[in-house]
Image (cartoon, rainbow, N blue to C red):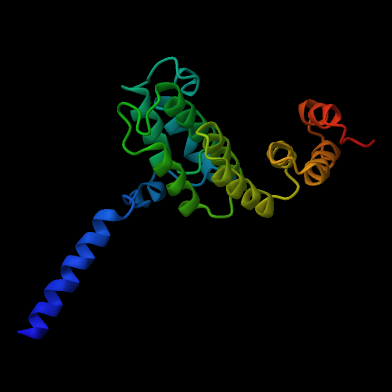
Length: 209
């Protein structure tokens, strides 16, 4: 009897933990099908991406002006099922969630958070995914999480000018001007064209040529 009671308690405990856990964001098997693959892979982009983009990731879908086969959320998540790390589709899906003030836009097969979870699981070495995720988190007011994602993006792609620029902006927010200046100088050395970060440092009296 004691053993039976112990086993029942374990089952109840396991069920409780499962109920409290974050929802699982789905398997990635779709990405390996005939019409899917890795957005950063040149062969997949040449051979498989045009099929998906022609019918589901049209200019109207990317700009959030109208769906191609139904609701915007459906077309964007269809694209992200086939190419989980599709950078432009991730950015558009994040914008849609922010615009409509919802974690799971109408017609979507999963939430915005799940889209990034799937992309990171699919290609952990893709720093651009983490940069886009960081931008989304920052707009959601989750600055600490945004900073963590952008730091990881920088570790993965240290020579990316946009990642360095965005990290500099976050350090300005934190008033860590020494680090902000370091990343700003690197971003500009790598060819980043916008002067906004430099201007912020100049205004704070923390820029040195």
